[in-house]
Image (cartoon, rainbow, N blue to C red; front, side, top):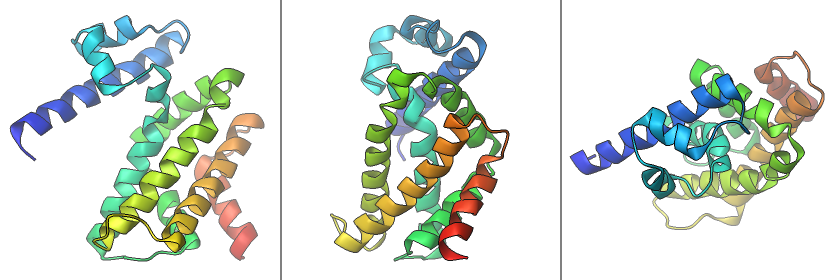
Length: 187
């Protein structure tokens, strides 16, 4: 990664860090784009170069989780995981404190009906990102039907666990809920 790409990634990460800190401190509604930009030491205009809306930030924990998963698949040389394998690997990454912490903050905000409705759009985007990542592992430009099935199933099943976590306001650990999904489907 060149200097320009590292600088862009650093700015993006500062915006994400600032947003989640402010969401946690002030709540989603009270946090403005200007507050996020100021905390990240950039302009509001720069914010919009990285994110189309404030709520797009709430999808970031899921995108980060998928990037970590694809990198792990690449590192371990796994080319064609099935939905159960993807789900297990996703569950393992749910142990990452930063990812889970941000997911918790996002979940508290997504309990709001207008944001919860957007979760379906985010999940579709995540499934597409994951399928494209799987295709990239095989050196292809577009995913196969099987890769789209595996990615969509894994994202939907994690989504089921997240919905239980959000809608039931449970004290259960998200990782335990994902493990419950795996056990329910595959024993």
